[in-house]
Structure formats: C-alpha cells, structure tokens
Image (cartoon, rainbow, N blue to C red; front, side):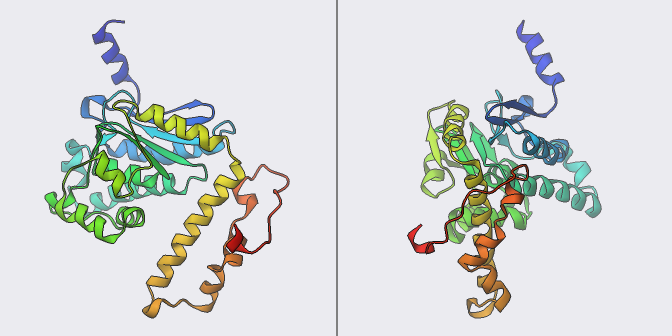
Length: 284
C-alpha cells in the first residue's frame, strides 16, 4: 500500500478502538495527525470499551497505548476548546464525560497498563494515572500544564497523582507546569518500568504476560483491596486527629477489608471461591 493510501486508511479508522489479542485487550488511541490529542468523542468511547474488555473472558490484562502515533497523548484537542468551553454548562458536560472515562479505567476489575511512548501531557497524564501500572520508553515526556492556562487540574486527577507520588511532588509538577523526562518520572514513582526508545508497548506486554500468568482471582481481589485501603486512608486523614467513626473503623480493619472483597463481584462467572486463609494478616 502506498504511503498516501496508508494515511487515508488510518484516518478512516475510529479515533479510539479496541483490539483483543488474548490475554490482552488493547485500547488504542488513534489520532496520529494530532499526536493523539484527546477529544471528547475519544473520552466518551472509553467506558464502553472498558465494558467490552470486562465481558471478554479471554482478556486478563488491559493495555492502553498510542498505536503508531509516536505519542501516548499530547493533551487535549485544543480545536474543541471554543465549543466545550463556550458556556459553563458545556464545560461541565465535557468535564463529566472525561471524569466518567477516567473512573471507568480506574474501576476496571482487570489490571490496566498504560504503555507510554513520546508525549504524555495534560489529559494524557490523566488517562495514564487512571491505569494501575505505567511502562514508558526512555524518550517519553510528561507534564501537567493547567497552571499555564489559568485553569485548575480536576480533583479526581489530582487525587490519583497524589496517591502515586505524594503531595509535595504533585505540587511541584502542578505548580511549575513543567515538562519532565522518563528518568525523573520513574524516580518519583509515576512509572513501573522504563524501556528502550519505541519499546513501551513491548514492555507493557511483557509486564502484562507476567500479570496474566498469576491468579486472576488474586489480581482482581488485590485491586479491590488496594482501592479499599486508599479509601480508608482518605477517610482517616479527612477527620480531625485522623479519627474515623466506629463503622468506618470496622470497615477499614483487616477483617472488614476482607469482607468487602466479594469473590462473586470479582469473578461473577465462578461457582466457587478459592479458599481464604484466616491466619494473622501480619504473616502475609
């Protein structure tokens, strides 16, 4: 196929799509002409794609990547700004669409890995931070730049960033709105792996193979356990003296956390759950 024909074929494809290649369900950003700048239609498609990978029995790990665009996502699609920020109502609506997409990725019961090549800025960072793990090539670049535009990074996105790297480092990134490299991103805890240039997807698949080789009941239970633990921490620090009401203390105890990990919710098609150890938590 001639280069012009290849370009036309690529542009005729949806701006975001799902490919299932067991054990992976790959959500592919496909707007190479704009370095995968995220438009509202791309955000709106994500919850359904997550539902599809959840329904696919052969999918054990979800990978989000930028295809052959040479970038993960270079921020928001600024060509839409005059429309989505035309009125407060329009801005609120687009914000709700984006939040729903990020929440769907974060809440996906199956492990989600972001494979990051090139630019990962603004909305691209938001999407990557909603994943469980992040693998980046050594030439990847990161940044969260709302402070340069006179706007505020959304609360949910800020929560995910702080949970990953801590408040001080999050403030550094948000206050300065600077661009930083993969080495620094890994040092601050944003990345699980840094691989050679152009190898982010291969690295994510290798990591995904390792995850897929383990018990899927365990990985999904771990996701729910970690999410529950983070929620309990937020509950504690939100009250004077770090205290919680009695019911929340019970829910956040080791026994309470185990009770919240319903194997039926994790693997609804299973007829029986694996045995649960009741030994002291400190030994595990």
